[in-house]
Amino acid sequence: MKKMGRAPFLGTLALLLTTIQFVYPQEKTLPLWPNGAPDALNDASYKEQVQYDPTGTVRGYSKVSDPELILFQADEKIATGTAVVICPGGGYSHLAINKEGYKVAKWFNSLGISALVLKYRMPYDGTMKNKSVGPLQDAQEALRTVRRNAAQWNIDPNKVGIMGFSAGGHLAATLSTHYNDKVYEVKDGTSARPDFSILIYPVISMEEGITHMGSRTKLLGESPSPSDLSKFSNEKQVDQHTPPAFLVHTTEDQAVPVENSIRYYLALKENKVPAEMHLYEKGKHGMGLGVFGTNKHWPTDCENWLRANDWLPNKDVYLFSYFKGNGEDGLHFAYSEDGYKWQSLKNDQSFLTPRVGKDSLMRDPCIIKGRDGNFHMVWTVSWTDKGIGYARSKDLIHWSEQKFIPVMAHEPDTKNTWAPEITYDPENGSYMIYWASTIKGRFPETKSKKENGYNHRMYATTTKDFETFTPTELLYDPGFNVIDASIQKLDDKYIMFLKDETPDPPQKNIKIAYADRLKGPYTAASEPITGDYWAEGPTAIKINDEWVVYFDKYRDHKYGAVRSKDLENWEDISDQIVFPEGTRHGTVLKVSPKLIEQLKKE
Image (cartoon, rainbow, N blue to C red; front, side, top):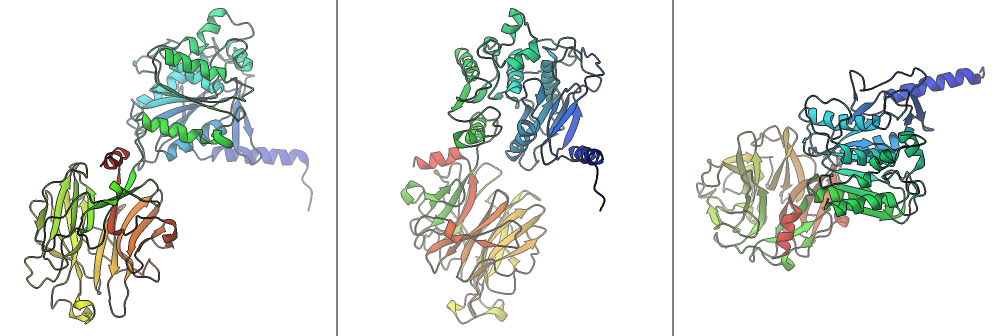
């Protein structure tokens, strides 16, 4: 094989890297100034340069004269409406656009925040009349561009923040204190004030002994005037209207002294502007999203700050409703922050004592949050009754008067009404209540002499107000004895988790079926998704990108679970979950942390 010469090789490599640049995953690149930046000059010798890392990924840019916004839009399924404009650092000479731009944008996207990486102009006399305001012009226009396109990009115009690293932090702080400066003509009056700022090891001051001299020189020149030094020392420009800030710095930062963040924080504090600062002992300048030790946790600290200030909704907490024993004492709750470790509430005492039904039990409690803001609960009241229990609550503490709903009273040969559940049907704005019942003489082909001759099928009724109900109908006949159905919405379909209750030969496992509509028809049941043990009472929830199905291993007197990303391949995770001792058939739902705190006080 002929050896390739050095020059052709470098040419091929350059072509490859250029190609890689264009396929870098990003949603949309927008010119910041489609008609040209204000006060721009044309120095033909000043050409943009691209830096690559060893893998060929774009690492940064220098000599930027054509600013852009790179939009990373949050997935609409998790979008919160919040957006952040990100200003990468680089001493006003280049932009570390991958580490302090694209990677950060993807992190924000994972939180449901849309991110826009600002590829701002480098201050240079040959491309702008006043290089000290060129970057500020770009930052102001970036905020205004986001607000002008807020509806199109699914963004709340009142939840748009600015973020900056190092010199980009100086630009973010400059925008936060100079958002009203008239540095170019604005015709529509759109505000450039950020709603919040996130400043990561920022350059704040232009004073000698504390500033980053490289950034100062690039922005203000070799011999800046005292007025410019004061103007661009942002700690001196803070007032009561400066947006709230989150600051991160490390004590051992040798490039930008930690005093920069401290001064800005103290100025915010003096002006009674909300601020939070995290100073970490270790960590060199330019650590991006964090590298090691405690500094790697700053993104989590930032997320918590955003949630505390309502720029991100609080994370839901998981609540599990269950019964103990035979259900005599009523409703029990446990909560979990991860869906794996569950802790009982109220010292595992009952929150509601059963009052209705033949036996006044409260077994298999199912709770959903209704569109009316109420929590609606149904439960099994007896082993042999022809109806179910119902109550509603605003806070899961104070409940309405309990009601007995005689859903099977029209069938005199009904033996039981077990494990009712509720699922909301957005197609017609109603709730479907469904349960398992045995009617003597029905479905003789699957009748068994074992287990008292129970031979269940799933039945259902619908309601819009829990006062009036449609006639009961058969919901699901899978061709075997079935109980404990639990239905979840799955994109444009519905998935039913159910128990095969066949006694001879015994199945006693969890299966799944699908339907295009809540009322069915449902497909044939799948193969079991649970293992070689008897399981009942499935309840399912999606945690991150995985489905988790909990169930009662009632012969083993403990709870189990399986999980799957595709609903086809299931992993048993029973050894990873912890439930309060004695937990019996219940349901899981998401609630707010505030509600959990209220329940903890009971």
